Image (cartoon, rainbow, N blue to C red; front, side, top):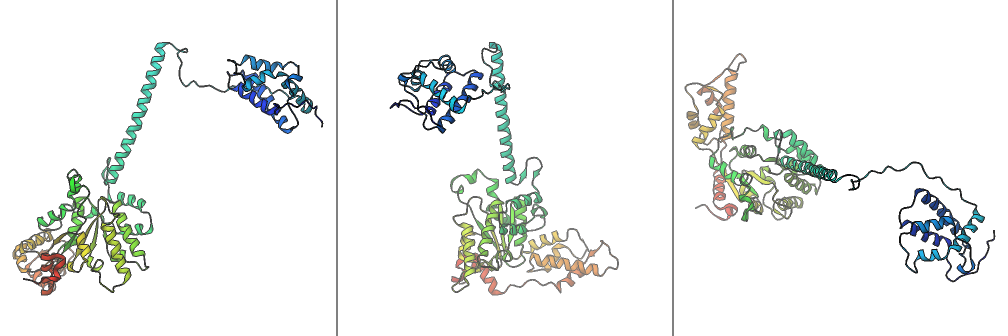
Length: 494
């Protein structure tokens, strides 16, 4: 198909460029009527597509065309222009070249045919006013509307802030181990929370060693220990919780005692004291041992230790209790196996290293041989409490607790029995009472809860239960450790 050629002009351009400029100038002016805007946009779309498909279409020169412009273009450019365009702008060029547009329209109609006008849609979009203007209501109505809007806005902000504060308060109460509606959380509720917070298999494995403190009697009811010993242990554990203002000032703000060692002969109540203290103070407790920390594969020991301290931080406030600590944290020696040394190093780094913080767990160690512990362990546990063999008064108190629900004959009582059990520890006294009650039950014919313990029953039990004897060497080592601590092996007894 051939097109009529027009004289070339140096300032000539494609028809699509003029159409785009015209469309832009109309859209930036006042809003058009729906019928005119719809018909113009359809026409401009078809003209642009035709011009782009015909690269030979050149706009004729203004001097060679005398044809009058189209009425629709004239109407759009005259009615919807609010201010005169500046000289040299695209709008001025379009007004100066009406004959070019007319020739271009005739050419497009000859080539592609006349486009069918599109009917304007009868569906009008729903317009929702965002606010009431002054022309739509009186001054009183406008004031009332603004007052109501301000009130609703303030109410919405108050409700949002109230819900946010309540959510933050509930989260703080839950982290502290209590529910604002039902009081302190039970062990079952805590286990659900800790199960969700366990991130890997090592942390999930440590869920089995969490101690249920709800089953431990409160107020140290099931034990008889010197009050000074209890007070000394509570000062380094629970005092920071009961005196938060004092521990947020000065040297106590960023520093605290990180551990303690309970040592003494076997059976003196080290484990029992730890459990009772955790219940009384409200601490959570992880009771670890070498069975959980030692793994069969190299490298997993360190991962379990890292998970132990990670769980301790999530359970804050928390006590990590290691019974028989000398078996795992003994002194490092030259020539020992590499994985044992790396495990101890990992424990020490987690205990008091770069990863420790204010929410780090409190490490409580119990051992019968404190002089075998590594010096770095003792440095991190500066509080060292001796639980020695009970005195006669302490044995009398322990026997009173053990026999409070038993009927005793007139020839025996806790005072008499305490004199007969010299050098007996608390564990020895418990075994003695159990054997005496068992001997009494074995002599009864019927199964009954009524029984009376006599002196003979206890003497018979003492033939079986003997006090755990401590050699002179062990007694001397305890005395050296109590006097000199980590340097016990360099001093002689004076």
